[in-house]
Image (cartoon, rainbow, N blue to C red; front, top):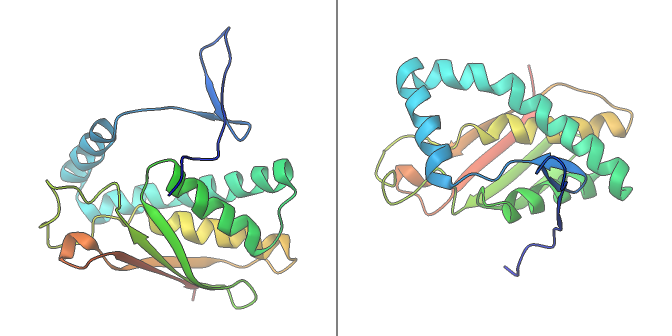
Length: 175
């Protein structure tokens, strides 16, 4: 992958970073992961996932909405832009294997997840569940933009921390 095609603008008065006209915070991966896994240990993975999911879904929806405005993107191009930016910002390399906004479905591959490190590789469980609601929220925006709003859900089908060579997510309509 080439260097990210993103410009970082820094507000000299506040020190805030902006990428794609959105405020950003740059933190070391170990800092983020240490906090993530500490909260998961305190709450349990299932409770932590339940607490994170609504915010992740909403954040992805809002990000796609704003990026569609900034860059004039529509349909699958919005979702593809989101996957590209997640990949460029260090979360891992996201690849769209299948995407059908009309059906509300998608299959996304994730290589080099930021949650699967040398320290977590042999965890034997799914570690990348935080991304699932992001994928659902992003595709929900695409569906709404097309005039067919719908509630979607996503799940991590497999994780590299379970011994697979990549993580895999599926997005489907919510029951």
